[in-house]
Amino acid sequence: MDGRPYELYISLDDLAPLWSGTSGWENEAPLRAALVSLELVFLLIADTARDARAAAPRDERMSRLWSGAVAQIRLLGDVLASTPPPPTLPPGAPSRATNLHVLADLAHHTTKLGVPTRLVRQWADTYDATCADVPFLLGLEPALDALRAAHGLPERRPRTDVPTLPYDAWAAPVAVAALFQRRTFNPEDRLFAATHQGVECWMSLALRALAAAESAANLRDWLAGARSIQQAACIVSSLAEAILILETMVLSDYHPLRVRLRDASGAQSRQFASALAAARRLFQRLDADRAERGTSLLTIYRRPEIHRDEHAFFEALTTLENRLSLFLFNHYKLAVRVLGTESLGSLGVEVQTLVDHFVKPLYPDLDRARYRHSVITSFAHGNHAGRIISDLERAPADPPLAPPPAALDTSRMRAAVAAYFDAMRDMDLDRWVRLFATNGAIESPEGSRPFRGHHGLRVFFRNFMKVFERGVVVTERAVRIDAREGRAEVDWQLDVRHQGIPISYMGTERFSFSPAGEIVRVTVLDDPRDIARQMLSGAERVACPLEE
Image (cartoon, rainbow, N blue to C red):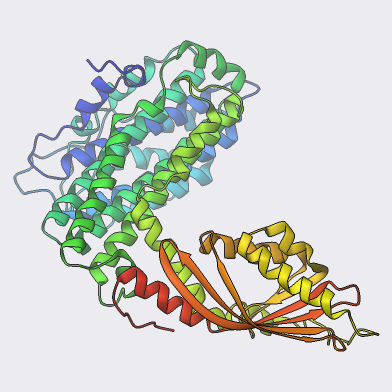
């Protein structure tokens, strides 16, 4: 018996054996898991239809459950379409025990106790469309016909030329209903348990997809691996949406259940932990292979047309990472909804600290490569930064600069220029911004869309501080002051470091001042492509071409 409180609560020891295959067909086990989950949804829909609590959001819960059933049928289509069952599969028979029959009975009972016809139609149409080209029947068809008839929907054209799977043996609707009925504390007990049971059913399919991806990776078949990873990502994405059904819980009923479930948490799911571990192994497999070949992560991102298969594999992993993070994020938001951010979760961990689980990158090396790629690209295309928006602006962004009414003090202008570069050396954001007028702007490089106002200036300088390490060396090579026009021009050289890569580049800065001696505008004349080349060369440790 499994000793984890969460898995004891959802009866995982009794649930998981329902997924075991006996026919030798590779799709039997995943198909069983999917059908078990579908049976749980039928039971939850029936439970919701009978829910007489005044506070229960019955219509919203019903709508979400049917939407979840539609999503499950679509996912099931991927399983059904992969490989057909072998001819040796024992013949089956239409289901006599599926809990879908209960929904048809409810529809006959009374309209108030039934389910909306539009939801039934959507699910039935999705089922028919998904299974139309499958070379067998699942066995739900007679029950679905009864449900259609109960809601006055058109009859489905029967298929008699294909075999039927042994639905009752594989989906085990009687056993699933018995597990469902174990949860008797209150209506939220059944919703809470069955939702997590369904998650575990589909997580077993995600793990199978990740295992297939690992097998493909071991053969260096990165495209096949990417397809399997994408399949797992689709499942996890659906689960991230599915657990939000718990938003419909009546908290006055859930909290007494929560207290009685102390020490049990979905965070104890071994299958989710296994999915995270498999995702990390998949990255390590390709990362080791590219290292053996002397290819960097940055090169794979920059030249996807050359490294097509590896790029597809990494992109699939990134999608999986995002979906796993979304799954965790939705759990966090559910916990906040129930407990508040100041509470401790069921495992004694502050709810707010759960944020770290979905913010921290699953693949730190890949995350760094993406960041470096974005920085290099920003500099490589810096001459055109914001150009699309500038071209769309109807009026000139900046009025022509008028000369001050009287010549400014040369020493004051020179001091302002010196303070400007001193603030850059010290990376002193506030001191740098205070040198500008409230409507001041910087255009860096010339021709790009300016950063305007103190807010925009802060954005610009924060980017500077983010990209370059402390210890900036600014050498002012020449300073030219035109006090009469209120302008200054400085030739400079910057020696900086980006993630340990030394970069040296030169340029000119043009300043315009207000009568009060504040900086009104700075225009930077440099070639940011030179920065991008040095970053790329340092990152690759070879002279690499820069695509622009």
